[in-house]
Length: 108
Image (cartoon, rainbow, N blue to C red; front, top):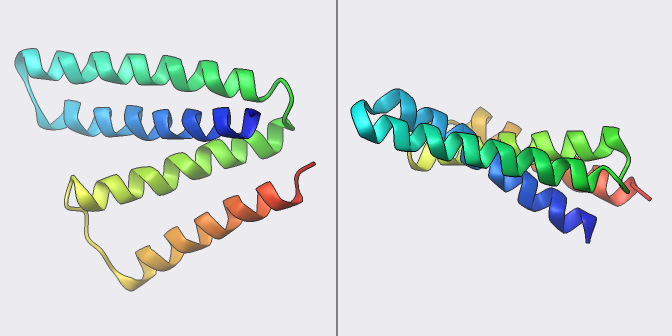
């Protein structure tokens, strides 16, 4: 169950990073709504990470959490923010995914 909580925490990390991107792109009232989304996503992500680390090793949990956030944010950047796509970018995103899966596989 704590692995699922950790995955959801990582998805909320993607949410708060994406909200930061939208804060940068907007102004006025819309900017404040995106900033509120950032605060909510950050709070939920940290609370879930804290819950997951009560039973999972902190080093593994933190690495998986940041890995999910990094991969998810990179993909959101490509799809939503029109970040450039190159062979090397896709290659390294893939290696991150394999590393996350590897950490999960070797954790007890």
